[in-house]
Length: 399
Image (cartoon, rainbow, N blue to C red):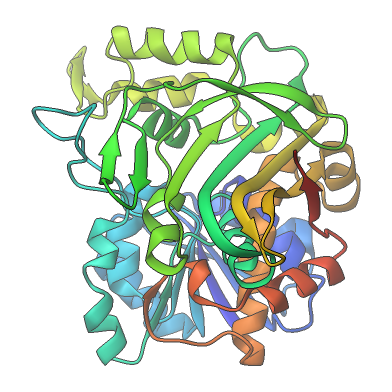
């Protein structure tokens, strides 16, 4: 398989490091607006016959089309911030991403009703992709991605009836030397945490709540322990109801009060805005300034300790007819990913999932046409291959 990776930041670099160990990937081209960043990834891998670097402006559909025509990949992996999704999606033939197109809050009732929802631009084009016999596999990171696969697995194998699918994310990661250092793209973090969270219920449909609403304490496995989680906007709430029969879908993230306070302050000051302001004659988006002022998450691995846990909590009726509450999860230790791959845990945990998905597509074990989420595919082969990669998932039964 030949893959074009658009975006050579933390997740793109981690994807390349994981794919290097799999013989299915015969050619991987890393493309970035900063050519030197793509070249640095390729140089670290030290396999010039398999890995190459190119420059591309991901906001330019024309540049992307030209690069795709020249590289001739079997698939295009979008490893950029979701603000670049539309041109990459429109330029590609077989397309994968780890975050869907951006939402826009309801103009009058943002904390009650959704406006433009996450992924709406892509999902509205499903019929055209299906008629063309092309596949766009959207949201195939860890969350969304593996969390959605857990939901489909629970529906197929563990439950006869599902009441709620609740994605719960928590960690005990610590970054030494910084008072505030997000372990993932701050641009994306601001977007998903400060937008009105989305909830889906069968009887009510989609609705929104205020940011950081409905706090709950969730006990994460493998020693991570109790973490307070709050509602956050995320793609699983859009995707899971399309393929999994359930009554309710939520997403809650263990942010911590300090993180919430920082994000709330950024919002109060208008520093979360993507609308450019004039600064001494230059037009600058405040959110880009915040991102530039903070450390690059991809460089934090050596200062990080701890683990990150992504998982899906499913409640309902088990196959035996009795009430069941099960948390399917994936824990990654930063010390392990740094030692074995040179990538910090959060970006590595995101990147491994498109590697697995592409290998399944290459084998023909996953196939389809249209704009599809991970739930549209059989979960068994994915979880088996994830275990073969040495990163098996866990299952925790709850009372």
